[in-house]
Length: 265
Image (cartoon, rainbow, N blue to C red; front, side, top):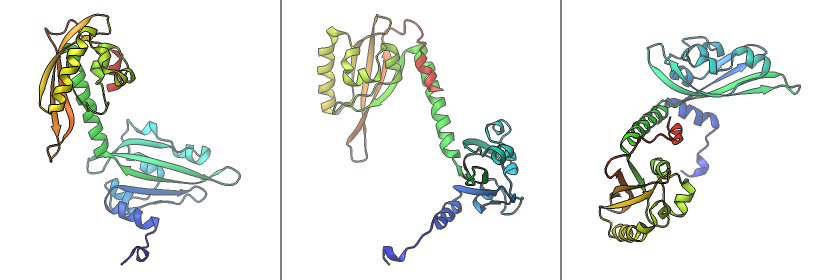
Protein backbone atom coordinates (compact mmCIF):
# COMPACT_ATOMS: atom_id res chain seq x y z
CA UNK A 1 0.00 0.00 0.00
CA UNK A 2 1.33 3.43 -0.87
CA UNK A 3 0.31 6.98 0.03
CA UNK A 4 -1.99 7.16 -3.00
CA UNK A 5 -4.11 4.36 -1.53
CA UNK A 6 -4.81 6.39 1.62
CA UNK A 7 -7.68 8.83 1.33
CA UNK A 8 -8.77 10.59 4.50
CA UNK A 9 -11.25 13.45 4.67
CA UNK A 10 -11.44 16.03 7.42
CA UNK A 11 -14.51 14.18 8.69
CA UNK A 12 -12.43 11.01 8.99
CA UNK A 13 -9.87 12.79 11.15
CA UNK A 14 -12.61 14.39 13.25
CA UNK A 15 -14.17 10.99 13.90
CA UNK A 16 -10.76 9.63 14.87
CA UNK A 17 -10.22 12.42 17.41
CA UNK A 18 -13.73 12.06 18.77
CA UNK A 19 -13.22 8.34 19.14
CA UNK A 20 -10.27 9.10 21.42
CA UNK A 21 -12.49 11.25 23.61
CA UNK A 22 -10.52 14.39 22.82
CA UNK A 23 -13.05 16.57 21.04
CA UNK A 24 -16.64 17.19 20.01
CA UNK A 25 -18.49 19.66 17.84
CA UNK A 26 -21.87 21.34 17.46
CA UNK A 27 -23.80 23.28 14.86
CA UNK A 28 -26.80 25.62 14.84
CA UNK A 29 -28.84 26.87 11.89
CA UNK A 30 -30.30 30.12 13.20
CA UNK A 31 -33.12 30.52 10.69
CA UNK A 32 -34.67 27.13 11.41
CA UNK A 33 -33.41 26.61 14.95
CA UNK A 34 -32.00 23.20 14.03
CA UNK A 35 -29.08 22.20 16.24
CA UNK A 36 -26.80 19.17 16.20
CA UNK A 37 -24.13 17.74 18.48
CA UNK A 38 -21.52 15.26 17.36
CA UNK A 39 -21.23 11.93 19.22
CA UNK A 40 -17.96 13.18 20.68
CA UNK A 41 -19.66 16.16 22.32
CA UNK A 42 -22.21 13.91 23.99
CA UNK A 43 -19.35 11.81 25.36
CA UNK A 44 -17.41 14.87 26.58
CA UNK A 45 -20.49 15.93 28.54
CA UNK A 46 -20.85 12.45 30.06
CA UNK A 47 -23.98 11.62 28.06
CA UNK A 48 -25.12 8.80 25.83
CA UNK A 49 -25.54 9.86 22.23
CA UNK A 50 -29.06 11.29 21.81
CA UNK A 51 -29.71 11.35 25.57
CA UNK A 52 -30.70 15.04 25.44
CA UNK A 53 -31.92 17.29 22.65
CA UNK A 54 -28.96 19.35 21.39
CA UNK A 55 -29.14 23.10 21.95
CA UNK A 56 -26.74 25.91 22.70
CA UNK A 57 -28.68 26.74 25.88
CA UNK A 58 -28.42 23.12 27.01
CA UNK A 59 -24.67 23.19 26.42
CA UNK A 60 -24.33 26.24 28.67
CA UNK A 61 -26.30 24.47 31.41
CA UNK A 62 -23.51 21.91 31.72
CA UNK A 63 -20.99 24.67 32.44
CA UNK A 64 -20.08 25.33 36.08
CA UNK A 65 -22.28 28.17 37.43
CA UNK A 66 -19.22 30.28 38.25
CA UNK A 67 -18.08 30.08 34.60
CA UNK A 68 -21.40 30.57 32.82
CA UNK A 69 -21.22 34.37 32.77
CA UNK A 70 -18.09 34.17 30.63
CA UNK A 71 -20.01 32.63 27.75
CA UNK A 72 -22.12 34.40 25.14
CA UNK A 73 -25.86 33.88 25.57
CA UNK A 74 -28.05 32.45 22.83
CA UNK A 75 -29.47 35.92 22.14
CA UNK A 76 -25.95 37.27 21.68
CA UNK A 77 -25.34 34.67 19.00
CA UNK A 78 -28.68 35.12 17.22
CA UNK A 79 -28.83 38.91 17.34
CA UNK A 80 -25.22 40.11 17.32
CA UNK A 81 -23.30 37.16 15.91
CA UNK A 82 -21.05 37.03 18.98
CA UNK A 83 -19.20 33.81 19.78
CA UNK A 84 -15.71 33.50 21.16
CA UNK A 85 -13.19 31.11 22.68
CA UNK A 86 -13.42 30.16 26.34
CA UNK A 87 -11.98 27.58 28.74
CA UNK A 88 -14.57 26.54 31.32
CA UNK A 89 -15.37 23.85 33.84
CA UNK A 90 -18.14 21.43 32.94
CA UNK A 91 -20.15 19.36 35.41
CA UNK A 92 -21.18 15.95 34.15
CA UNK A 93 -24.38 14.20 35.29
CA UNK A 94 -22.30 11.64 37.23
CA UNK A 95 -20.70 14.45 39.26
CA UNK A 96 -17.42 14.43 37.34
CA UNK A 97 -15.75 17.70 36.42
CA UNK A 98 -13.90 18.32 33.18
CA UNK A 99 -12.20 21.42 31.79
CA UNK A 100 -13.24 22.12 28.21
CA UNK A 101 -12.06 24.66 25.67
CA UNK A 102 -14.95 25.99 23.58
CA UNK A 103 -14.11 27.61 20.25
CA UNK A 104 -16.98 28.98 18.20
CA UNK A 105 -17.64 30.91 15.03
CA UNK A 106 -20.70 32.59 13.47
CA UNK A 107 -21.48 32.56 9.75
CA UNK A 108 -23.21 35.55 8.18
CA UNK A 109 -25.42 36.24 5.16
CA UNK A 110 -24.12 38.54 2.40
CA UNK A 111 -26.08 41.29 4.16
CA UNK A 112 -24.15 40.68 7.36
CA UNK A 113 -26.87 38.96 9.39
CA UNK A 114 -25.95 35.90 11.48
CA UNK A 115 -27.24 32.77 9.73
CA UNK A 116 -25.47 29.87 11.49
CA UNK A 117 -23.07 29.08 14.30
CA UNK A 118 -20.74 26.20 14.96
CA UNK A 119 -18.18 25.24 17.52
CA UNK A 120 -15.55 22.71 18.46
CA UNK A 121 -15.01 21.54 22.04
CA UNK A 122 -11.66 20.24 23.29
CA UNK A 123 -11.02 18.41 26.56
CA UNK A 124 -8.05 20.20 28.17
CA UNK A 125 -8.54 18.86 31.70
CA UNK A 126 -5.11 17.24 32.04
CA UNK A 127 -3.33 20.30 30.61
CA UNK A 128 -5.15 22.74 32.88
CA UNK A 129 -4.67 20.62 35.99
CA UNK A 130 -0.95 20.34 35.27
CA UNK A 131 -0.73 24.11 34.77
CA UNK A 132 -2.56 24.71 38.06
CA UNK A 133 -0.21 22.34 39.89
CA UNK A 134 2.82 24.13 38.43
CA UNK A 135 1.43 27.52 39.51
CA UNK A 136 0.86 26.22 43.03
CA UNK A 137 4.41 24.83 43.21
CA UNK A 138 5.83 28.12 41.95
CA UNK A 139 3.92 30.06 44.62
CA UNK A 140 5.25 27.66 47.27
CA UNK A 141 8.81 28.16 46.07
CA UNK A 142 8.40 31.92 46.01
CA UNK A 143 6.96 32.00 49.54
CA UNK A 144 10.04 30.13 50.80
CA UNK A 145 12.33 32.46 48.86
CA UNK A 146 10.73 35.55 50.38
CA UNK A 147 11.54 34.30 53.86
CA UNK A 148 14.72 32.22 53.41
CA UNK A 149 16.32 33.76 50.30
CA UNK A 150 17.01 30.27 49.01
CA UNK A 151 16.01 28.96 45.59
CA UNK A 152 16.71 26.40 42.88
CA UNK A 153 17.13 26.79 39.15
CA UNK A 154 18.14 24.86 36.04
CA UNK A 155 20.12 26.25 33.12
CA UNK A 156 22.75 25.54 30.51
CA UNK A 157 26.20 26.95 31.23
CA UNK A 158 27.72 26.34 27.82
CA UNK A 159 27.48 28.12 24.50
CA UNK A 160 26.61 31.44 26.10
CA UNK A 161 23.19 30.20 27.19
CA UNK A 162 22.42 31.81 30.52
CA UNK A 163 18.97 31.74 32.07
CA UNK A 164 18.30 33.57 35.34
CA UNK A 165 15.63 32.50 37.78
CA UNK A 166 12.95 35.03 38.83
CA UNK A 167 14.48 34.96 42.32
CA UNK A 168 17.94 36.10 41.27
CA UNK A 169 16.45 38.81 39.04
CA UNK A 170 14.42 40.02 42.00
CA UNK A 171 17.40 40.03 44.35
CA UNK A 172 19.75 41.85 41.98
CA UNK A 173 17.30 44.07 40.12
CA UNK A 174 18.73 43.27 36.67
CA UNK A 175 16.62 42.28 33.69
CA UNK A 176 16.68 38.86 32.03
CA UNK A 177 18.23 40.47 28.94
CA UNK A 178 21.06 42.06 30.94
CA UNK A 179 21.75 38.78 32.74
CA UNK A 180 21.79 36.86 29.47
CA UNK A 181 24.30 39.30 27.98
CA UNK A 182 26.58 39.41 31.03
CA UNK A 183 25.74 37.12 33.93
CA UNK A 184 28.87 38.25 35.80
CA UNK A 185 27.32 41.69 36.20
CA UNK A 186 25.44 40.63 39.33
CA UNK A 187 28.66 39.53 41.08
CA UNK A 188 30.80 41.95 43.11
CA UNK A 189 33.58 43.25 40.78
CA UNK A 190 36.47 42.05 42.96
CA UNK A 191 34.91 38.57 43.13
CA UNK A 192 34.23 38.03 39.42
CA UNK A 193 37.56 36.68 38.17
CA UNK A 194 37.88 34.09 40.94
CA UNK A 195 34.29 32.98 40.64
CA UNK A 196 34.31 32.78 36.82
CA UNK A 197 37.51 30.73 36.64
CA UNK A 198 36.32 28.27 39.27
CA UNK A 199 32.88 27.75 37.71
CA UNK A 200 34.26 27.31 34.18
CA UNK A 201 36.77 24.75 35.35
CA UNK A 202 34.21 22.74 37.29
CA UNK A 203 31.62 22.88 34.50
CA UNK A 204 34.26 21.49 32.15
CA UNK A 205 34.86 18.57 34.53
CA UNK A 206 31.14 17.81 34.59
CA UNK A 207 31.05 17.08 38.32
CA UNK A 208 28.93 18.48 41.14
CA UNK A 209 30.54 21.36 42.99
CA UNK A 210 29.83 24.39 45.14
CA UNK A 211 30.99 27.98 45.06
CA UNK A 212 30.35 31.11 47.09
CA UNK A 213 29.52 34.44 45.43
CA UNK A 214 29.03 37.98 46.61
CA UNK A 215 26.08 39.36 44.70
CA UNK A 216 25.23 43.00 44.05
CA UNK A 217 21.73 43.40 45.40
CA UNK A 218 18.95 45.62 44.11
CA UNK A 219 19.02 47.77 47.26
CA UNK A 220 22.69 48.68 46.70
CA UNK A 221 24.01 46.28 49.32
CA UNK A 222 25.96 43.07 48.79
CA UNK A 223 25.09 39.58 49.95
CA UNK A 224 27.11 36.38 50.26
CA UNK A 225 25.47 33.31 48.73
CA UNK A 226 26.43 29.65 48.50
CA UNK A 227 25.64 27.94 45.17
CA UNK A 228 25.54 24.18 44.66
CA UNK A 229 25.80 22.97 41.05
CA UNK A 230 25.01 19.46 39.84
CA UNK A 231 24.72 18.10 36.28
CA UNK A 232 21.46 16.58 35.04
CA UNK A 233 22.29 13.74 32.67
CA UNK A 234 20.31 11.89 30.00
CA UNK A 235 20.10 8.09 29.70
CA UNK A 236 23.43 8.02 27.87
CA UNK A 237 25.18 9.95 30.63
CA UNK A 238 25.44 13.20 28.69
CA UNK A 239 24.90 16.43 30.61
CA UNK A 240 21.59 17.98 29.49
CA UNK A 241 21.55 20.89 31.90
CA UNK A 242 22.80 21.99 35.31
CA UNK A 243 20.66 22.28 38.42
CA UNK A 244 21.64 24.85 41.02
CA UNK A 245 20.57 25.50 44.57
CA UNK A 246 21.44 28.81 46.19
CA UNK A 247 21.07 30.07 49.74
CA UNK A 248 22.18 33.23 51.50
CA UNK A 249 25.02 32.75 53.94
CA UNK A 250 24.14 33.90 57.42
CA UNK A 251 20.44 33.87 56.60
CA UNK A 252 18.29 36.53 54.94
CA UNK A 253 18.56 40.13 56.10
CA UNK A 254 14.90 40.88 55.38
CA UNK A 255 11.99 39.18 53.60
CA UNK A 256 11.99 39.72 49.85
CA UNK A 257 8.78 41.29 48.56
CA UNK A 258 8.83 42.04 44.87
CA UNK A 259 6.35 42.69 42.02
CA UNK A 260 7.90 39.76 40.13
CA UNK A 261 5.71 37.45 42.18
CA UNK A 262 2.60 38.85 40.47
CA UNK A 263 3.57 36.83 37.43
CA UNK A 264 3.52 33.60 39.43
CA UNK A 265 -0.21 33.52 40.21
